[in-house]
Every structure is written in structure tokens, then in C-alpha cells.
Length: 178
Image 1: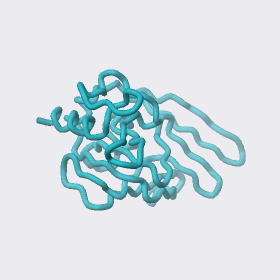
Image 2: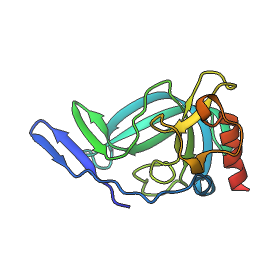
Image 3: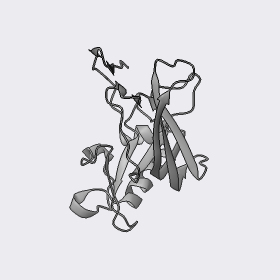
Image 4: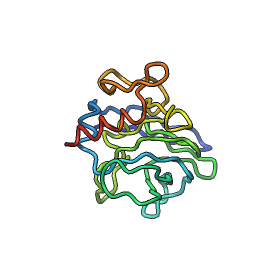
């Protein structure tokens, strides 16, 4: 995996924007995941890394709606590289950006020391946006809100516009883990 980070400051911008990640099928993501949950973004905070204050990290807190696999508390805090502090932005190319209130299906890598650049399976592939307020109307798309690739679609249980219904997508993840 090759990562690129864009660093911006008042003096100018240095850029190396290339993030290359091997594509994983949804089944492979589910199998690789240590924990899987459905949650809503409750807060997003960027800060300087305590161990390396010239670098930033972002902490996203999720309110967990449903545990799909693994042991998950009611709230989960995830930390990933990059963020904006005091008007300076550090960005890892391809890293997701979150907004409070967004819902996701989250597939997490096993925790490691030192921490990974991204806690999501496959760098950021294990992150799916949930669209729709009610459980009955909720559908799943990729992290950017776009239609899923054909390998991510469950056999049945399509929702509005042909997107997979949330429950059918979760059943697909559970079945892949058996």
C-alpha cells in the first residue's frame, strides 16, 4: 500500500497525492473485519498527535445502532491520520471525511500497535454510507454515497433505486463470516 499526504500551511502546499490500495470484495472485507457495526457519526474532532505534534489525526465518535460482528460498546471512537488544526490541513489522499449525523456500516481492522493510518478494512473500503432515515427504507451505498459495485450487492433485498436494503447488506456480511 502506498499512501500520499497533502500538507498545507501558510508558506505553501507540498503535495504527494497518491493512495493505492488493492481492491477487496465485500466478502473479503467482512472476513477480514475484526468488528462490524452500524452507527451514526456523533462528533468529529481533529487534533495534533500527542506523540508527533507536527502531524494531525481525526477522532470520529460513532453512536452504535447495531452490532453485526465482534464486541462493540454503545459508542466507538475511531482515530485516523489527517485533519485540520488552526487553519492548517493535513490530508491523506482517499481518507474519508465525516459529518455529524451521517450513518455508516463500518468494518474495522483488528487494532494494532502502532495504530494504522486508517482503522477501516482495506484502508477505507470497509466503510459504507447508509441512506434513509427509517430502517425499512434504509439502503447502502459506498462511503461517498455512490451506488455500490456489483460484487457488493446482495442477491436479493434491493431497496429504492436498486440499492441494497440495509438489512440485506448486513445479512450478506454475516453470511460471508460463516
